[in-house]
Length: 338
Ligand code: KG4
Ligand code: ZN
Image 1 (cartoon, protein in one colour):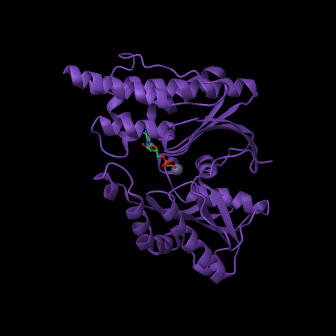
Image 2 (spheres, protein in one colour):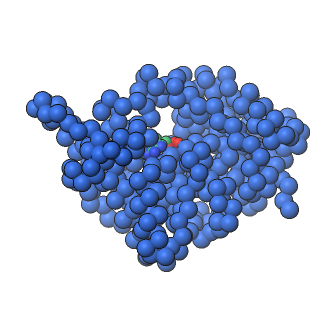
Image 3 (cartoon, protein in one colour):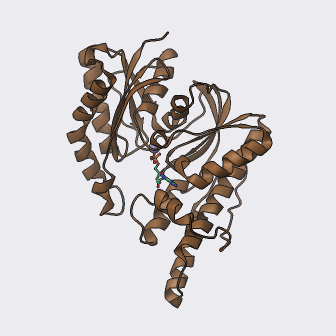
């Protein structure tokens, strides 16, 4: 059995995270120090505060990950670190730690794309999962459909042309006076609302691209108009109707891509994968069509370093290592790899 130990490091946004992975799937530790309470009073992530908190937390978090995994730093064989996308200052903290450790220990460094990492969270939750499959990545900053041929070979089928789905959740929640991050709050509120109460528009976008800015504006206009008229709003109905629209858009494109490319497995990834309605809708649709459906456990849906270690492990198998000049790429997207 493969006993390679990968240390994963993730600091792209508001979680300082480190994890130790043995081989490709055996997660030994997964430590996440969240900054959410710190940013909550500002209604969103404040980049400088995030960087400063990462610099305070990074070494204790790495130490804790090693202790929980019951390994020493000298046992680690390789380091996988997120180099983008994310906040520049935040990414640089993780990168500096990873580069220094790799240099001091004389071990290889792997540069991981955070969005690819989200997909790989599924291999940790479901060790039996193997490519090929169709992946829907829905995070705070990105929405993308990816045809995974193999671990290191995939094609980007489409992505959002404007806002990400998570961004729309967060923005609408903010205007509705819900705390940051808004996605889980809307999810909770929607459970008591009527999802058919309000018909919000579905964007018309060709192929497998998405667009959420029109929907976001329509919901914000609806809220503003109601406020100006002095109407009493049923916030749960607004949350449920908005969520239903997002889920319908995501599910419709995902299922037609699975049909077109004859893919029998659908994999959900990214923070919005934690949305109960998205998970339920896709699971039921997959059951009806006889498709297999995978999504990560809640703790692996949102940002973590376990998924970064897993992605890094498979890149290392393909000899895809970084050198000492590695830099942060804040606007890194997800691209076809062959
Ligand atoms: O993947 P992630 O942790 O960070 C990024 O890489 O962006 O995703 C964070 C996003 C936020 O927009 C958050 O509101 C959303 O995921 N999110 C949810 C839920 N849990 C987290 N959105 C809808 N429903 C949820 N239950
Ligand atoms: Zn993420």
